[in-house]
Length: 232
Image (tube, rainbow, N blue to C red):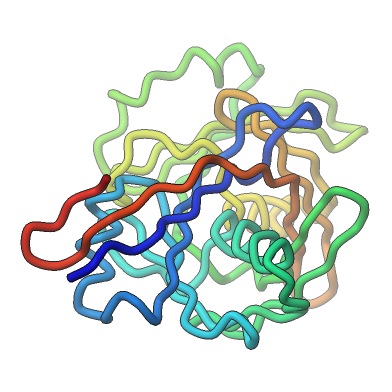
């Protein structure tokens, strides 16, 4: 098979453009369904998006281990990237359902239901220092989300998420966890996760939430799916 372009962005950067969770974006029309999971595993990002119809926002999301019906950072990143390519794309369509997209200043946000996404084990810790001191080697299964208040009245949180079930040691920024935590706590949140990524949530009626953030481009790559698969 010929090579395909792999566009890369960092999702949920801080205001200066640092940090963020890397995301691979591939034209799904160039990669058959049977090769998407192997390619996502080969690329090694926490998620890879395959865009099947850029005009209508139809896409699939894969971690290195499995397809995901919804995930936050891939949908935010895909929405930003499609807009940068000239597509209006006010709705994304993933297996979980339709996802409205909004853009305010430099934030791109997606709307999702708090029941979507992975199942997390939640641990509220006493301080941000305890969150930062945690070791990913202590977590060998599932999706474990550690968090503490930075400023409870202001709704600011420090967090990390360990995700061996996704085939990665630690997820830098987890949008679906942010939507679920906003619903659990019943309020809007500003979350700093991982090395310093920023996620912004808003609480909506009936379990709906938005999660958004800033996105920054990275240099593209190329990959050759199929027999003898390689990433260039």
